[in-house]
Image (cartoon, rainbow, N blue to C red; front, side):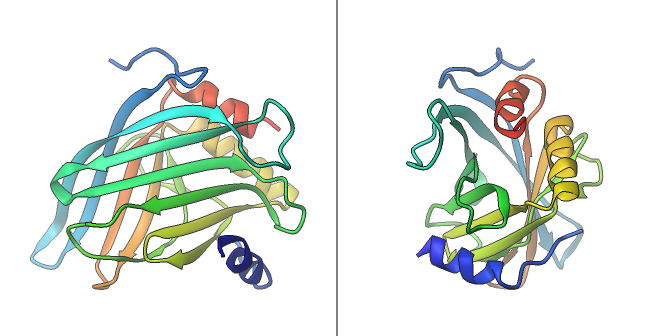
Length: 202
């Protein structure tokens, strides 16, 4: 189902303009995650802290070469009952115009209700910095599953790789079913950089 929806969306492809030791061989590294939510009664919005656990694991895609690896990030924001998984992998399906895919799976029970859409991905140098968007297409599969494909155009692919490997935080902008906006910011600093260098170095 996810594959067929992504293929359909590809026809109208648009381009959006003290930590633990380094994780390796499946070992987990815990870093910060922050959820910012729009609040009409508070111009500054709401901020809720949590964590993301990064790990690297063998890619299960049968079309992937031997030894290929996938990045998995498990997010928890306890006060908002948000549990979310990011799965970042290289794409080996020539039918998809993407160098990498980012699969986002949201567990039921989010305090604010369903997520209507994930708008894409932005990379930034710090939690408070302005993010630079990755060239990508985001597709909603259902209320708990989303898929983002990173553009395979050579210039976009090069810029995406540079941003992912050089910026310490990732922003995931979202819109809830209530039309309220939110941004999930997750840390990916030098302790997990080897993971991203491995997956984005090709």
